[in-house]
Length: 302
Image (tube, rainbow, N blue to C red; front, side, top):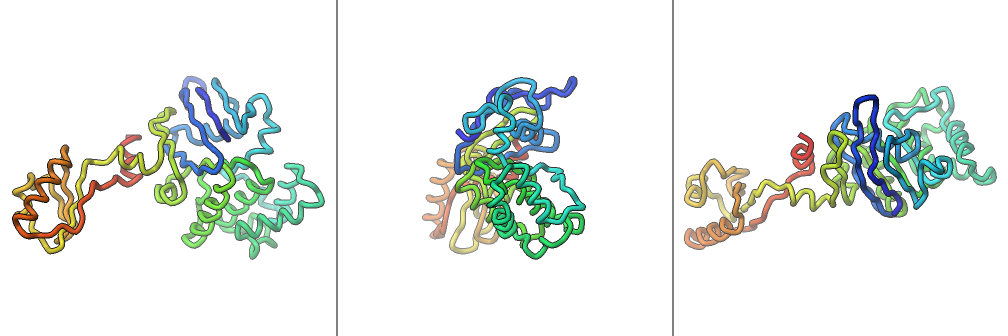
């Protein structure tokens, strides 16, 4: 396993911020780490990277214990914190050269590596500027560049797309997806569409506890509202469909598309099929509607 978190807890005074959580991440996975504000996401990420000492539990990165080998671990991890601390008076290239020196990158390869991450993160046009003169989006790119400059095995990204415009969002998402083919990525975000587009699975944390840890598709299926979506080939009225179910359980999406809320989708399917044959109305499609990840998130964390 690239990351293994075992019974991890963190207490601040009397507050239990992270409550005995466990999970594993494999190489080549991009995993969304979701939760409301104050749920324990950033605290967990800081503990994985070795910047915060846990109260209890163990963290292994590439089989190495974070608490026992903190400096070795930092060679394996690239970290973009939520606050993204940068030296605003430094120029972009100057800062990345400094970041490379901290990671003890071979001095004969440093300049080449800096140019590589500048190109990867789309910083070329802004690389001659001081960091303080950059927009929030470009500052975020600099933070991402320093996180990958030493080619780490694991990336811990806390709100990596914060402040990016729509075009920049697409570019950075593509970069993270490409990086995720070779690395392990733990990604925290409040944007559910990002998780759906980039991540294979998600961990949901609330009040310091993990409330879900599964593939995105499984989370959507498990927490669906038992809603059957039926598309007819010609317009149908709600009055006609009232023969099949209570009108309150039927929602019209369009003249041909209806949503049926039911506790027994199999039985309702049969009734709709029989009715459509009797009424000579063809069905274009009929399927159980999956919940959006946003709906699942609200259910799990409310």
